[in-house]
Image (cartoon, rainbow, N blue to C red; front, side, top):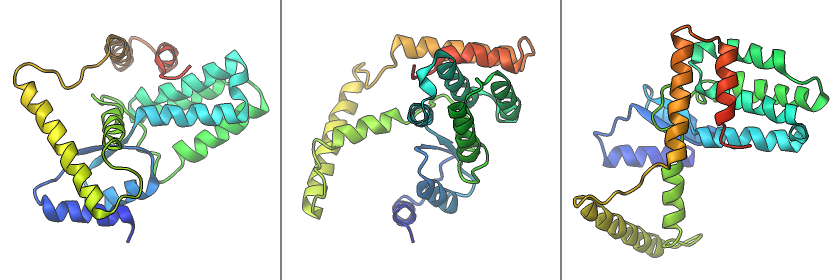
Length: 225
């Protein structure tokens, strides 16, 4: 039994009524398999930030980002995440038609197909179409916060003490929220980007623009440059 399997079984035993409809995660295969095993009907969506970062890291490692055309190609690949799942293949064909002719881009395309289009675990997780929250950044923020209280490799007493401190911190935040305190807000840039993404997708769905035109608009809104 994997650590993730054990973790979710413990959570289910303690919170028996918990039956999530959607879960956003990083692209850790053991975690995804454990979620599917414990929550068969749940919709799993991979974090858009981590999807982008994976593409750009691979592209840089292969030398794709050394040219402007290479960078544009990666942006188009990243934009595929916003499309309805049934249009991803059509979108990929457009990306391939526009792809620069170079060995490094060919290697990158092979990686994209193997990792994101044909991988039996990940293939249906990276589409963020109509997702209100496309990332798990809030969890990453919490991870950074709780590290203030729990150092690496703690014993059970240190771990418990850290959790208690974390609970007290967020309890105080919740108390303040009743007086109009905002726990978190999205940046104006994030809000504006989401509006532009939604507008382009609505144009696509209503037949005002083609898949290719939609991707060309979406590529300008990628997280990484």
